[in-house]
Image (spheres, rainbow over the protein chains, first blue to last red):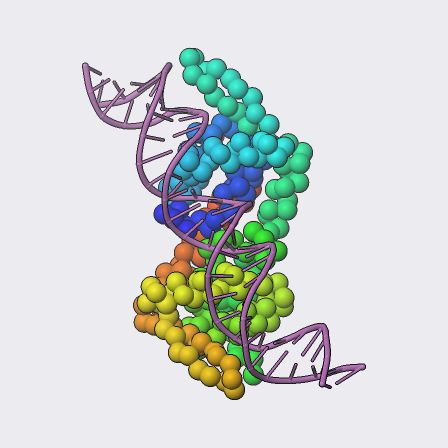
Length: 112
Length: 112
DNA sequence: ATATTTGCATAATATTCTTAGGTATATGGG
DNA sequence: CCCATATACCTAAGAATATTATGCAAATAT
């Protein structure tokens, strides 16, 4: 975990879930939205985000549309049907992770 | 996440916390204990565990004592004072992570 | 004018883990 | 006795995910 207090592997879940909720976002917007929602607690670095967006697109979990805003490019990402399936899986994994960690870390009675 | 349903970075927390609770364990014992507590849900691979134990020892978070049991070696690890401090930090980080994820992932009201 | 923000991107490196081996002793079942 | 499995340590190659450090360019604020 870096300054983000995030475990490696959780970023994909965040991005997919956000896109599922918001419908359509571009990269920079995602970084700002996550920062805002988390009150500055989670900062997505661009060096992690952009390669991941490309990867998710390559996997068919996202689609991309390029738009010009003024003279500048924006690449809007949307979640696909497969992406939505992936969100369900990832949310289940996250819940399982939290349960496992609680089981392992909560002070528990000595068993024999 | 692998078959473990664990995020990368969480293994250190598990090992340190377990050693804080149990006081003194050897590597193989840790793998078995974690498997037992999690009902088979979390399997620590030795390829991850042993290098990590060496690393934590190098960082002064663990100490090691080698013992012979019959004709076979066991390396018992104990947590140090600094290791206990690290546990406190890591537990706080985990709780922060869970809170952040809940904030980011829970369906929430659209804010303008 | 100039610095900051917006918006995209990649490359080098670090961390953490899986996979796939290797060595050797101990033990239980046939 | 033989052999599979369990115990107990270990490392090396590679994958996955992230940080850090850049680079480019347009827009906006000071």
